[in-house]
Amino acid sequence: MSARNKRRRSSFEVPALAERGLTERQQRLLFGVGTVLVVLLGGFGLTFVVSTLGSYEPEPRQAGGEEIGLPFPSTYEAWASPKLFGPIADRKADAAALKAEEVFATKTLRSGKLTLRLVDRRLDPACAPVMWGGDALAELGTTGCTQAVRGLYLSSDRRYVAQYTLFNMAGVEAADRFVTRMSTLYRGGGWVRPLESGEATFAPDGYTEASGHAMGHYAGLVWVARADGREPTAKDDFVSLALAARGVEKAVYRRVVAVSPPPAAGTPAAPRTPAASPAQ
Image 1 (tube, rainbow, N blue to C red):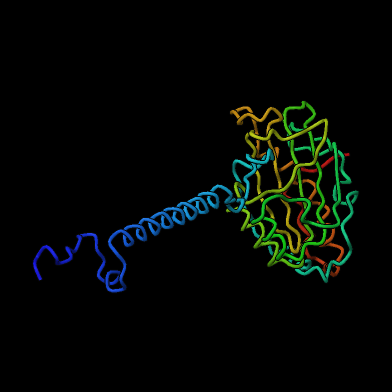
Image 2 (cartoon, rainbow, N blue to C red; image 1 turned 180 degrees about the vertical axis):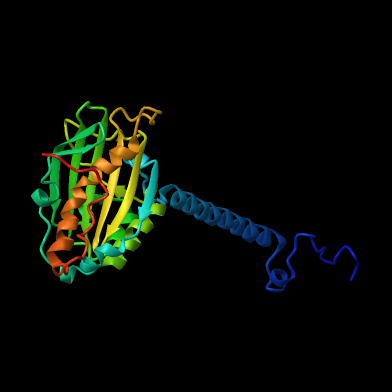
C-alpha cells in the first residue's frame, strides 16, 4: 500500500475513539460538544458558589455596650466577701426574699459634703432581665440568682449619678466568683442595665466607675459617674460618691445580725457598714 493510501493520523486524533471507528470529524464534533458541556457545568457551579457566598450570613457576634447603646464602666474593681458575712454565706440561712423598700428604705445618702437622693428603685423577681451581654448572662446563670434590686440616685447638686444593684445568689462562692468574673466581662461581655429615669441617667459613651462587692450570698454592683458623662477632675471625689452609694448595704448588715446568735457579754458589737451614715 502506497503512502498516499495510508490514513494520515491527525495530531487531534484520539486513538481510543479511532479504534471505535469514529472519523476525525466525528471526534472533533464529540470533543466540541464535551467542551461546551464542561463550560456550562463549570459556569453553573461557579454561579452556585457565588450565589452561596452572596447569601451567606455569618453568626452574629456578641454586641458590646457601645454597639447597642448601653453604658458600661470605664473601670471596675472586685472585692470578695469578708468573713463577717459568714452567717449569711448560704441563702438557706437567710431565706427571706429581698424587698425594694428594705434595700432602698433610705431616700437620702450622705458622705462628707456629698448628698445622694433616690430617684428610682426596682425589684426584679428574675435576674437575667437586669443584665445585658451573653457572657455576663451565662455567668449570672451559674449563681442561682433569684432576685435583683436596683436603686438610682442623683446628687443634690445634680452633678453625679449613682446606681446600686444587689443580687440575691445561692451562696458566697457564687457571689465571689461573679464579682471577680465581672472584672473581665464588664466591657465587652456585659454589664448591668441602668434604670431608666427622666431625672438621672448614665451617658451611653460617658466615663463611669464601678466596683463589685460580695457579701455572703449577696453580690452588689456600685456604679457611679458624672451626670454629664465627662471624666472626673481633681474636684470630683468619686471615692466619696461610691461610699455614699454603698450606704444601701446596711440592709445586708441587718440580715447578718438577724441570723446571728446574740453576742455574749463583753463581745464587741457587729461592725458598721463601711459606707457613710445615711440620713432620711
